[in-house]
Image (tube, rainbow, N blue to C red; front, top):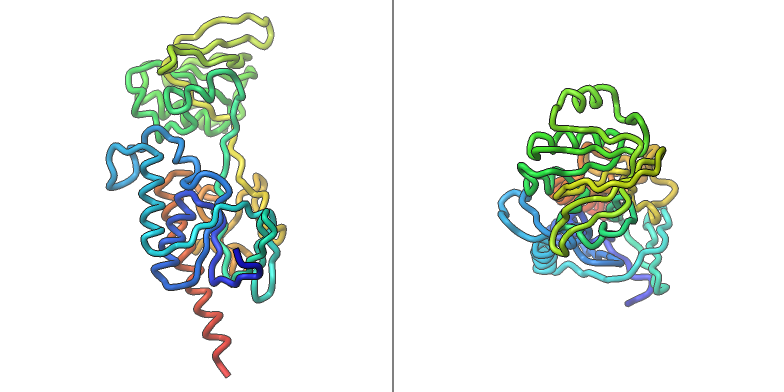
Length: 316
């Protein structure tokens, strides 16, 4: 690739937010390039089923990612599979440094690097991902209607998702390593009011086991007595935290206490010309459709920003 290439818009991240942003930028006829270091499509590419993306019924995450990619490339989006290692904020142009040494400069920058769920790191977690192990009740809860599931965690998300799952599953075990939850009291009250939820205190999940195709049970250990026992369950939902991929977020860009980028309704940050979309951005919920919507908003705003800069330069 060319060193010191100059673009109207650079997009960092090739998930739903980045691909939607790329599509909209191409439609706006601004010179755009997208960088993605890993799998195009992001986390959805490894999702077994996606049933809540409007207008598309019964599709795998990989196939949805392929459709998003094909759509964006159909409008001529340039995609480079290289890692962005640093971003320097500039007055007129922002600089994007790649791991291979190439340097790109851009008028507008869209950060769409997403985030990563925290994992337990136990046997069976990776093996049964998409076949009983999930990190999103809204995405996968439907598949466990009238079944028994385990929710792991003790914060707001774990409590909210346990209540949500209790409307679908016949039994929800809430496994927490301590003897009380960190969730807000209003959420704890909702949880206690639901007869299908059974808290399992002072306990950690040690392994997730199944028949090679689907989850059948988890092995849990009481952290006080050390007692091990098997808990029959067909699903395991893990909610122990979510971290934004903020490594390449410039220090000048404002983030909240958890590291998510703070933006306005146009997805613009406090730094002119820098936008954030998708799971990297501070917002109410993380869903594929919301990420794609963020990408569209960020692209529209970035395109307008680029055009305003061009107009300003031509005014005598």
